[in-house]
Length: 551
Image (cartoon, rainbow, N blue to C red; front, side, top):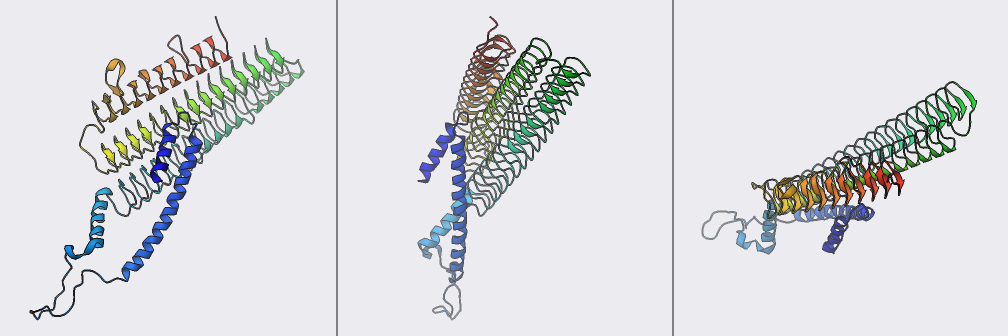
């Protein structure tokens, strides 16, 4: 039954492409943690009972007292090993085997370096889980102390994939966050870049709302600071869709106005349904907007304060969706740029709640990973606190496998280094672990180059590659499967550099099947051809939305 459950859990992790299995993985992990806790209680009770029983027994080493036959001498003899019986022999053999498995004492598991661990492959003390590098963690693959979750780098986190301390949530890069995917400190919400935000997708600090680019805004979709309202492009406005500063009202273009639709400065009254030029709809300021309450330019939708957005509450530029404060993103609550997904504080992500950049997956606070809940960089898998791992729950780096707290291991539950196998705490003196690798510092199989993990990774044009994680990548710093190009792709089948997602061609694309026609790229979404497009199936440059064309 244990083997069946473990096999099902590994299958969930291995098939978890863009977080679709994340709820099932979290549920399974929680059930394992509950079972482990119950086992700890049972073992403590068993230890107490057996200790009491052992204390009542006479030692086996005491021989009969009195005169030895024919000598007149009183003597004490210890029972020889051959006469101790099967129980004593088994205890002796078990002690020897345990000494070869764990470096320190009182561990329940194998391959641990430390004390009081319930699990395997830990480097530290009192961990309930496997592959941790630190102390008192409840979970696996943590690099730090007192974490309740997996794949954290830092201390006292409640969640997974955090890089920092005292976070309640997942995928945060920072401290004291309540939420997920934040890059900063003390945020309550998701996908914020900055600190002390209450809401999601903000760039700046002290915002109450979502999609703001600035600080101390009360509302959403503002591009500026100190605004009370939404969709304002400027500072210290009270109302909606004002372009300028210190306006009170709606859709004013200018400064220090009180009213609706005024164009100019220091005016009071009603100037029209729109101000600015070339606007279609109601209460728009700026120019070339279509919709309601837009400031800025060339927006289609509502309460946008940026430039060239399609949707609502966008304060950035060229985004498709809602509450995006970054540039050329597709989705919602993205404060990073050219993201495809939602709640991303980093840039160039395909997924959700990533505080790092260039990830394909969910809840990654590190960068360049393909998978979920990674606080390390360049991983292919999930819940890794280390770097360049192919697998999951690794606190060490450049491992191919599961639950390794050491480095450059091929296998599982190793706290040592350069091991090929399971449960070893030994530091080996070899160049690589695994089989068929050429170079140094590789784990896995048939890799060519240095510090690669996985299978069959190499460099461009068949040369040596470096720091690749996954299967069949060609280049440097790729994670995933079948990526080719110079460097920094994550996902599957990408060609070029800094591509994230699936089957993108060119440079700096995120999403699915995007192709850029010059070096810049920066497309997000699906099926775009050209540059700086967001959304889907656009041809040309600078489109937000769907099915746009410059040709």
